[in-house]
Length: 386
Image (cartoon, rainbow, N blue to C red; front, side, top):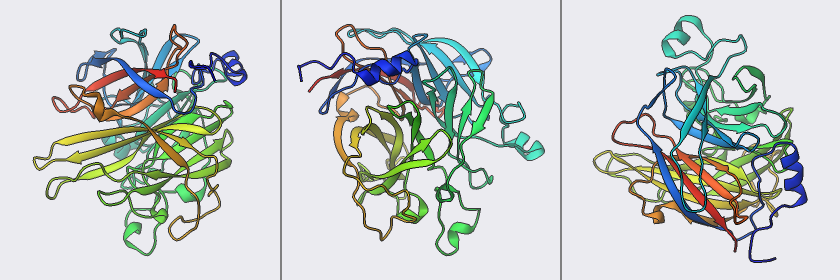
């Protein structure tokens, strides 16, 4: 192959005709990234009566040259919502982010998702929305929620119109059902761990199916990653009807650094992004508390390849089972970028193709609405050929 990325392949042409913004060019194996620049949004920046923050997912719309970004605010500050924006850049410069709209996710009855007090009084669901993707076939969106065991809220994958009104909910296999409160202490529980559910979402290269990643292993699949050992996470390919088409095991790295005494440390998948039919980009994001309780982020971007991996969709529990995990390759250790601060990176999207024909990538951080501790940052990269 020539020393530049292929400009367009037949799959990319088909995607673009269907307004697919995820694969503007197909990076070859062995790609690397060059940081073009960073932009930030101020803490709780006001926009149309809302506070911007908690940005846990991002996607690019080639038809409008715009972006969608979801907040994981559980309707505590403002109703659960997503934003539209303009983010313009070239290979040398990134302009400030320009917000263009805000839309509120709607429940089946047309109402916004409630906050905790409203939920206790009126019912409904309190969401924890972690990822958003534009549908390559039309202007609708898909989004995921992690669920909440204490509230009896199950994780979900939902389809909505561009204004946030609900179209439908994907049916899920029983393996993902979150156990009821108290069940974890009894016997051998199964299902999604609390606050470690559907964290990553990406349309597959075919534009017809979706890849979904859980942040940490299912309860029946073994322990979470720690400073000594990694873990095994399932990444699942769903049809638009909820059928599980395939499922592979992603080998998660161990936690990058040891925590302070009695402090917390974790590593998990924070987002995924399809490259082609076989490969995905996977963000591993570790949060480690030091002795003073301050969190430090360790973020690594890997290329996952499912070729040769075992399809485990019919394997009820990974613990004790025999299977071959997907292969992976480190693309970028983001802590080597020497940024003034590397924050809680939770979103990634392909952007427009640069003038030199190279693909671009944009990442965004979730500041958890923490003043003076975290930031909302946008990082823009050029994808370099091998």
